[in-house]
Image 1 (cartoon, helix red, strand yellow):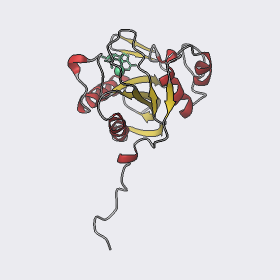
Image 2 (cartoon, helix red, strand yellow):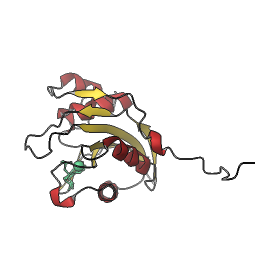
Image 3 (tube, protein in one colour):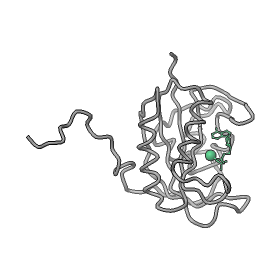
Length: 185
Ligand code: ADP
Ligand code: MG
């Protein structure tokens, strides 16, 4: 089965934002047919909110890199189920959110379906996406814009504040060794 390198953006601006990001990272480690190959730092970012629906709480954002044999549609379904499991309010999808996932890139594929556009159409306008993406893979190539992640960051006009945090991503929920004995010897 063919494998693709995929970048998933995540963000939380409701409730315990670090807790939700830690849970999201832990759950990415449980995706079927997939393995996590990188997790960016967390970044605290000012809401970018042209419609004025997101509220005033700043986001925690980051990017996870995986290798997967899932299809793009199946991955999106699982991410949406995971958003719901993390308390995302489907009745107020554009309001403040405990967790939002976006598929940023799916290999070099270009996808233009009604429910799924890849590369994500706004990623190159968003500092809170490009900063963690560049941390993970500065040379990653945008198949439509024909620019690397670090070139896109260099071109960026977004002046919204984005600050890297000095906490370890997923620190609360690292996978445990699978063969450890529950009893001291
Ligand atoms: P936001 O734009 O704030 O992330 P949502 O998470 O509610 O809003 O996403 C709205 C819709 O965007 C979803 O129903 C999904 O079908 C669609 N969508 C299109 N392209 C993507 C993508 N690359 N990643 C995630 N969702 C996408
Ligand atoms: Mg989303």
